[in-house]
Amino acid sequence: MSFRTVFTAMTTLTSHTTSWHARQPIAFLILAVVAWFALYQTLDPVAEALVSSLPVDRSSHLGGALQFFFYDTPKVLMLLTGVVFVMGMINSYFTPERTRAMLAGRTEGVANVMAASLGIVTPFCSCSAVPAMSRPQLQV
Image (cartoon, rainbow, N blue to C red; front, side, top):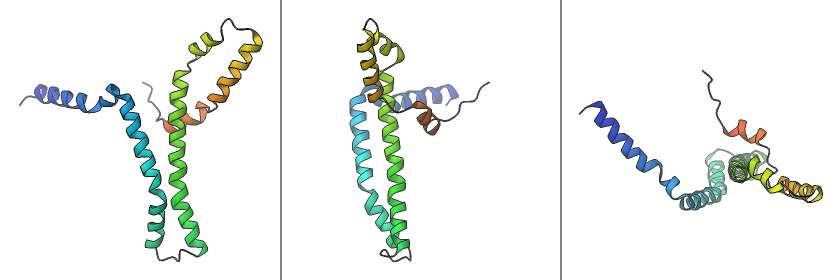
């Protein structure tokens, strides 16, 4: 079997398995939301199980602190990931060009109110989200 045959077969296989979310974005979004909520619901039982597996009394201060840590750390990370995802989707919809087009031709008062409303809807600054959720790209 030649390299070209293997590469073509792998490319065909991966193109079908990796692009289903692009072909059915609503189904992917529903599946992602269900998985996120299912994982979120398991945080408390998992935290309790972790603390009970340690040689620490759950009713002690240390046991309570460990349970709080094991529950809240993944919870905060999941909530941050969810907020970044939702705000990224909203920010991709409200591009600067679309915002300019929405505000063009309006009186100053109406444009200010509309711009403030858009700022309320999309308050999540990308300067805090991009470094946390993206990886640096190498420049050649």
